[in-house]
Every structure is written in C-alpha cells, then in structure tokens.
Length: 242
Image (cartoon, rainbow, N blue to C red; front, side, top):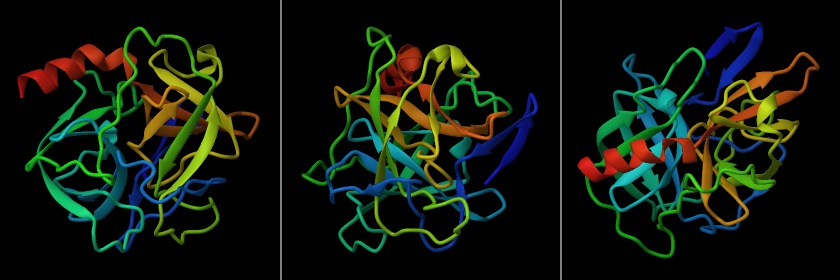
C-alpha cells in the first residue's frame, strides 16, 4: 500500500503488496461465481521486483482497464477467475500500458489506465467485456457495486481467495475532492488490493475505476472512483489507434 498526505487528508492507494493472493472487499459478500465475467485480477512485478495486485476489467478482446497507479514492470492478467486457486483461469500478459496522459500521482486525478494484452482474450461464459458509461451518462447514479479481491478488514492482513462484492451509494459530486471523481462514504467499500476494479451501476455499465480512500475529519472513510465518462475521448483514441 502507498500512503500519501494531501491537504491534511490521509489517502490510501488500494494496491496490495503480497506474495500469495489478494483478499476481499470490506463489508461485502462473496460474489456468485463467474457472475461478473469482466473482472480481472492483475498480478504485477514492480521495478523493485516486488509482487503486487490490482483489480481491472475487460473492455474488449485485447484491452483491460485499471487504475494508473497500478503501473508496474510486468503483469500477469487473470481472466475468468473466481477463486485465486482456480485451475481453469486464463492467464495472459500485457504488451503495452497506457496511463492517462493527465494522471497526477499526488492527487490521483485521471487515475485510469489501459492495458493492451499480448494475446487476444477468448470470450466465454466466464470471460466477457463490460460496457462503459458514456458522456451522456452525466448524472450521478445512486446504487452501484464494487467487486474485487481486496482486504477483508482494516485489522486483518489475511486475504480471501474468492471474488467479493459490495453495494455502495454515491454521494453528491460536490463532496468529492476532484470534479472527475465519483465518491461513496461509510464503513463498506473497496480496500487494499481492489484498485483498478470497476464501479458498476444500475444499468450494468462501468462508471468508474476504484482509485483511493480518504479519511475525513469526521473519521469516516470516503471512497474515490475515477469517472469513466470524462475519459471517453481519450479511451476511444487509444483503443482506435493501437
């Protein structure tokens, strides 16, 4: 986990540094196996040769979306995964990473990245892309779901082997630290290991990318998600040109 202080607010980037497997969403429950076939687990080697994990999601047969702070030296991309020990998971590598050109690592503005797969994914009941919210989806959706393999609790370093999910309710944009972010608050939400996973809302589209947490002055947690609609032109350019 990376920890930064920004405007006297504790910001927790949701990567997980581990050598076995990732864990689960705080306050959530186990997802129905393979009910979210777009979900991706990234196992990464950093430039210090450490092993870390992030979430991600499949956009097409050759592109995965994740958070820009999940940049690494190399990646293994696990598709069709529910349990980390699933022997039937599809494992691919990454040809090239495209962090957003406006990404700021200090504030996590534009914390979004595309990964071009070295080999095209084969779609199946367990492996399918998800549609993205577009620029017409400008209103704040109320009910959303976040899924991932992040930590189970803030006091427990043990990691679950299965995909977890949790319902979150988005708050007014004015309460978010930046204009290009959605936010939710409370005790339930993503944590370490969940970075890069999708914020999926009522219409089944991905609206955001799990980015970071801030601890508010009240002591409650504020969960931040990079807005996908704000990056659609950039996404279209990268996916159309590469």
